[in-house]
Every structure is written in C-alpha cells, then in structure tokens.
Image (cartoon, rainbow over all chains, first blue to last red; front, side, top):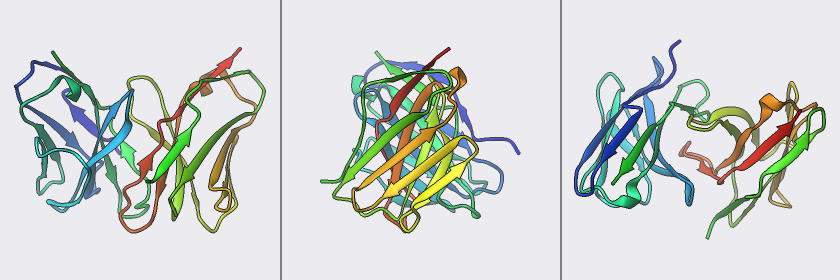
Length: 113
Length: 112
C-alpha cells in the first residue's frame, strides 16, 4: 500500500500571498488530519476531515482552512501568509481498523519571506 | 492548562546501552498514549500505543510503561544502535476524538 503523499514538498512564498497544500491519504483511509510543526511550538493540530466534513478543529486563525474531496484527498489553504507561518505542514491519515494510529506524510516545508 | 513535557535536552548514549525517554503530563486524563519517531525533514512514524489500563507494552527492542498515578510514560530502547538516533515524540489522546496532543519530542543520539 502506498503511504501518505503530500505535495509540494517545498514551497517559498512571500508575506501576503496565499498557498494551497495537498495530501493524499493511504488508500481506504477516510480521515485526514493536518498539523503545523515549528521548532518553537512543536506539532500543533490544525483540523481533521472525515468523509468531506470537518470533524475537529484546532486553535488556529481563520486564515487556515481546509477541505476534503470525495476520494478522501485533502487540501489546506493559508491566506494572507505571515512570516510566522513558516513551518513543516504535515498531514496524517487514520484507518478504520486502528483509529488511534496516525500515518503521517513526509510534510510540506513552507518558507514565508 | 493541559501540558505534555518531554526533555528538551538531547539524550546522548553509547551504542548497546538502554535509552530511556520520559513523557510527563499534567491536567490530562488520557485514554491512551503513543510514541512516535521522527527523523529530520520527515513525518513522525508510529511506534507503540499503550492504553490507560495497561502498565507496560513491548515491541522488539522497545518498551513503554504508563503510570497514570505519576502521570508519566517511560520509553525504553534496549541494545540501542546509531540507527535509533532520531527525535521521539509522545502523544496523548483523551478518548473519542482520535486527535492526539503531541509533546515537543526528545532527541536521542546513539554514539557508535
């Protein structure tokens, strides 16, 4: 089975721009979560989607949004980028069998200049 | 507020020794606790899960203990190898949401 894939792997943007990141979960997994990882804050939960619906949401401003498609692929969008948005963005998928285990993708490294 | 603490200082040990990493938490009643390994520039990889009613879990060279009274989990790697060098994250979930809260991780460096 292919793992979780994320595109792009690296991205450089400037302040004020917006960005869209993509995540394809493991085949058969319907839940996708997004995390932001920075050296200062560690891994912080952004949101989780299940069957195209946002099921859980973390404590991030409205500039961070996401969606999930019928094939379980997910995108997250960050509008009006700030320098502090520079981070590794990780998505994880959860299978129906072992719902506690998160399978992470390699992440998208975003640098905001 | 809820807090998960992992030693921010790197743990340096010699190959062959047992590495022990600590995860402490406060203001939390987790249903289960997980340990993940993360290599630089990569996503975390799940290693072990232990539930609140379990004291110990083992998998090959890995062992996890969970003391809900002390609010602490210990993660052991026996016969450590340089390939075990990575950052190890603990994650707690209180039950129901399947969304864990992660600690900041402890870096382990195994010297040959």
